[in-house]
Image (cartoon, rainbow, N blue to C red; front, side):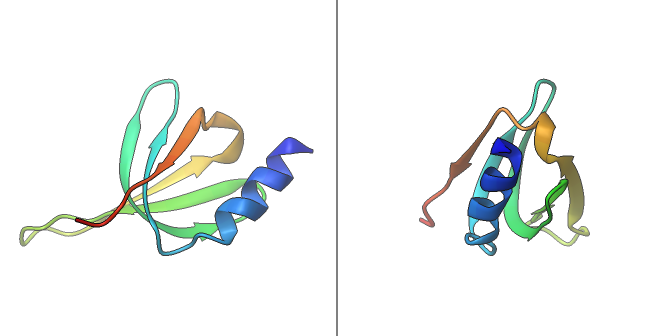
Length: 70
């Protein structure tokens, strides 16, 4: 039940810069898509490289921090 509420709140913040922590990773990027099961964060590379897409299971997320644009 908590996961559905958490996913619903994240869905209201699509387009925000976020930092997502799991047990093994700290992913920073733009919150792109949220479903009940998965979150998509796009890691934006400021250089000429391509952007990395990171799919994260909602139940694997320890915390999400919303970053303020500088």
